[in-house]
Amino acid sequence: MDPTEAETVFGMAASTFTAGAAPGFYGVGAAVDFASVEIPVTVTGDADLTMTMAPSSQVLDDGDNVEVAITVGNAGPNPAAEVSVAVDFPAELGGIGWICVGSGGGTCSPDGSGDIDDLADLPAGGSVTYTAIGALPDPFTGVLVVDGVAGLPEYLVDTNPSDNETEAEIRSIRVFDDGFESGDTSVWPETMP
Image (cartoon, rainbow, N blue to C red; front, side):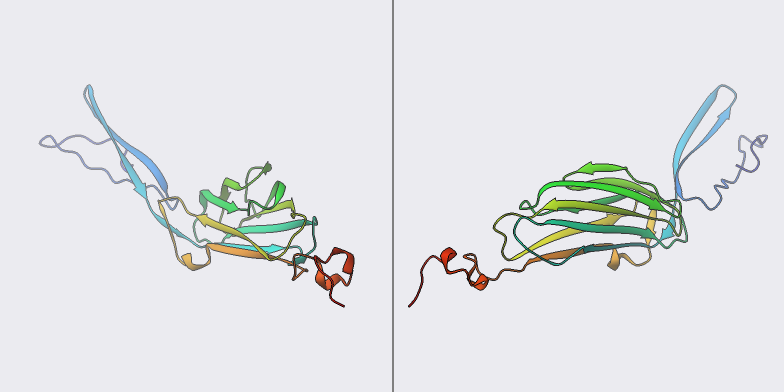
C-alpha cells in the first residue's frame, strides 16, 4: 500500500494497492480507530503452459513394461504456482509407479503410483517431468491411450491453452489375438490344411 498510513479528510483517506508483478491472491485491510476491515484482491497475470507426452516405445509386446514421460513447462512471462497436472492411464496398465523431477526451478511431488493428480510450481522457464512405468497386459493387442492435461490457477490466463493437453498411444506388435503372425500353428485356434 502506498502510503501505508493516511489521515482522514472529511472521513475519507486514499491509498494505492501496489502488489508488484506477482499475480496471486492478496488481502487488503484498513483500520480506523478501533474498527478494521479486510477484502480479498486478485492480481491476474499471463503464463503459457505446455504439456508433452511420449512413451519409450509405441509398439510393444505382451507383458512388456512401458515407460511414459510427461513434461509440463511454463514459458511465462509470469510464474505459475499450483499448476494442476492430471494424467489418466488405461486400466489395462498394471502396477503404475511414477517419479517427478523439476528443472529451471520447477517443483512437483517426488513420486507416486497410479494416475497422476499433482500440483506443480513452475517459474517462468521452469518445467517438471513425470516418468511413469507400467506393465502391459498379457495378451496385449490393439492400442492403449494415455491422456494428460495441465491447468493454471484461476488468477492466471494461459496465452496459448491449445497445448495444455495431450495423449500418447501404446500399440501392440500383434495384430491377431491368437498369435497368427508368429507362425506358431500350435497357438492358433484352428489349423487349415
